[in-house]
Length: 273
Image (cartoon, rainbow, N blue to C red; front, side):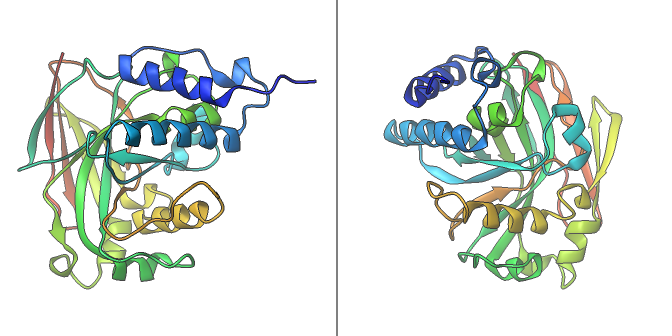
């Protein structure tokens, strides 16, 4: 008979690795029955521990919304995690600096960030979600893996904070200023990601599960199936997944983005040790 895992012990192990910026061994290799439901249970235990320590939840991140990345990382659907006032930074302008010592194998992901002024309905369509959003921003999520070499299965990533490290949010733009065709713009926008002035990749809004709004609609529906998960509420920010491949970052590099097709400014972040 398979051994029942001690989920509290797994949560303590994972949180300690996150706090100390060190690797852990794959949960899915040690525990053959470690599935997504178990991983979300572990993640919820870590979430409760962070809140008990004083972290304030301010929203959610959605991971693996770009299907082009699924084969590379062995996943087949998006995942999600809470983000906190300790990991979300609202930038004063379009330039930022970021130290890397607190991250393990960090990568950068350019994303669209949405702020909810109303609680969306459980059956909200991508189009009706716009009525619940008061501002939109472009952001960089710094993601990381506490599993060596970014080798894992989907349940490992859920237990590991959905690979969240930090979220740098650029200047917020009120929905009212972004035009009547904002839903189409979010899908059709293009983004150029550069390193030290050299273009690395061009992405598009549709890479986030068809549209950043579609990614949020998926999140709302998933949360409704998870008994331990609180529904998305007014006041939360949601970062909707990378529009390009996740790219490895190193100290001394400056990464820049430029957006077209939507009234959002690009960002530049310089990394240090």
